[in-house]
Amino acid sequence: MSLHAPVPPSSGVGDVDARCRWLAQRFDAVRSRSAALAAPISAEDAMVQSMEDASPSKWHLAHTTWFFERFVLADGGPYTPFDPAWDYLFNSYYQSAGPMHARPQRGVLSRPTLAQVSDYRDAIETRMRARLQRGDLDTRLLDIVELGLQHEQQHQELLLTDIKHAFFSNPLHPAYRDDLPHAGGSTAALSWIARQESIFKVGHAAWPGDAGFAYDNESPRHRVLVPAHALASRPVSNAEFLAFIEDGGYRTAGAWLSAGWDAVRARGWTRPLYWNEACEAEFTLGGWRALDPQAPVCHLSYYEANAFARWAGARLPTEFEWEQAAASLPVDGNFVDSGRLHPSAPANASTGLQQMFGDVWEWTSSAYTAYPGYRPWPGTLGEYNGKFMDAQWVLRGGSCATSADHVRASYRNFFPSDARWQFAGLRLAKDSA
Image 1 (cartoon, rainbow, N blue to C red):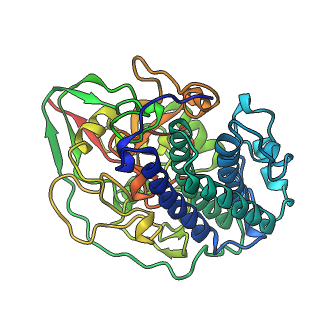
Image 2 (image 1 turned 120 degrees about the vertical axis):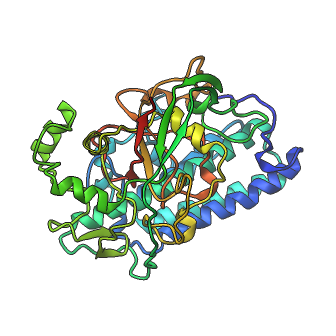
C-alpha cells in the first residue's frame, strides 16, 4: 500500500518531527474519546449485534485498533502482532488484506473478551506512541496515521448509533446514559433561501496534498452547473413530519417511490424509527423522552425523506446545491462534542441558513457515484470508499454523533435507501422559476 504525497498542512506544521508531535497529541485525543464513549457500555452490552448493518461496540473498539496495527505498525520491517488470529477477526472489508470474519456474525464473538480488547487497545496505543515519539514514521505512514484517526472518528459515530439500536431492540429499553442534557430551543418559521443559476466548484483537492484532509470520494474538485433553486432555511422538524403522518403519509402510496412503498408495507413502517406508537415520545441515547416538536426529525430512511419532500410539494436538494450553500458557512453546530447526543432545536432562532452542520445528516437526491476523474487511493486503502459506489445516496452535514473536526462542506456520507438507524433527516429544496 502506498500513499506518496507531500505533508498535508492540516497538522499546521511543515516538518516530519513536528508533525509526529502534532499527530501524537491528536492520536491521544481521538483514542481517549473512543474510550469515553465506550465507558457506559458493559461487557454484555459490548458484544450485542442487533442487526446485520450494525456491529458490536467491542468490535468497533478492536477494529479501529487493528487498523493502526495492520497499516502502520506492521508496515515495513519485522513486527510481532499482538495476536495473529485477530487479523482475521477484526478486518472489516479489505479483501486485499486477507480473509475476514463475516460481518453478520460479529455478534457471536464472545471471545476475545472486552477486557482483552481493552488490553489490545492499550498495547497498540503504547506501540503507536513510541513510534510517534521516536519520529521514525515517514511521510507516507504519517498520512496513514491521520487516515486512521479519521476512520476511528467514523466508528465513534457508529458505536453510538449501533448501541442505540441495540438498546431499542431490548424490551427493557435501557438508556446508554441517563445523565444526558435535555436541550431546548425554538425553531424559526421555515423560509426559503434562493440562489440563481451558477457554475460552482465542488469537492476537495486530492489528499494527501496542500488543502487538508479529505476522503478520496470528495475529489477531484471540479465545476458543476447548479440551476436556480431555493433551499429551506432549516431541517424539517418533528412537528412537520408528524403532520405528514397525520395526513396519511404512511397509509397512501401517492408520495412514495415504488420500492419505498414496498418497504412500508413489508416492514410495517408507520412512523420514524424510535418514535412510539402514539408519536408522542422517542427513544434516545438517554432513554425514552417526550418528542420535541421543534427539533429536527431524524432516523429517516431515504425513502421516508423523499416521500415527505414530495408530500410537501418540494424535493430533496442535490448534493451540489447543499455544498454550495454550506461552503461559505463555518462548521458550527450540535456535534458529539456538545454532549447532547441528540438533535435539538437551536438555542436562538435566526434568519438565513440554519443547522447546516450537526444535528442530523441530510439526505440529498444525489446518487453516491464517482466524481469525474475520480481515482481511489492506491493499494489496500483504495477499498475504503470507491467500491461502495453502488445503490446508495449521499448525505451531507454531520450529526449530533459526529465530531466537529471530522466534517467539512465537501464531506460525502452515504447509505442505502432503507437505512434508518443513523441520525438522518432532511432539508427541503425546490426549483426556482
